[in-house]
Image (cartoon, rainbow, N blue to C red; front, side, top):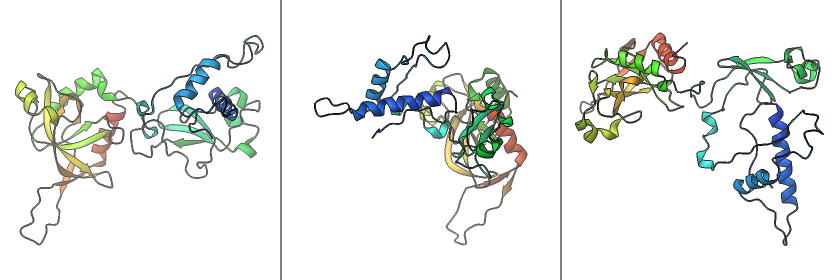
Length: 308
């Protein structure tokens, strides 16, 4: 029994699929030859990688025998499990809904952000599918129709993998917006956390410049990366998002935000009156805000597709 699966995470039905299947077959056959005199069990992924990399980089049939077609050379890579990003941040998509469900076995990139084509069964054998004309497939009765589905991650993270905060153009716009920040404003900023790509906070003061004194006193209070002497920043109080995505309430978390990460200033909102406790001794400084859909949409857009 193999303890590891050798395959690409969420790979498509292309040439890689058959090669991964071949590698699993090679490893299975190798372990079945195990005897007390000559043990061949592969107990770690590193051992499995070394076997494949040392003996099976070149296919059994030569390039001439394959007539110049197909796969001839395999290149294997290995890394420890802790170095692999969780699937939820890479390819965990909740795409297959409605008539097409998780039993689908065909996914195709249609070069449209946030959308992919899916199908219940991959054909790839008829005249049209062999030429990638999948919508004219001759085996529709068996394979099903090709349908477009929106790709939405189960984890709630952003659909676009690139971190926009590293773009020089985006950073310059952030610096200009931060100069307009005043105490009490609701501001939206970008976050590198895939499950929380943007945050809403209340500005506690106008923009300041990081000093040597800040470096010694506030070094551990920066939200996104380190702020060095001379960098402009905004001190803010983080807000917690409610269930509907529009309701936000303040928290006790105060932090320093680099001005480069500011995406929206003075977000449109209304303050929600919270019912007070009947006990006189119970007081709360928590404020609740309901943001407009337009303000949230603008923040999402600037965090996900700021250059479009």
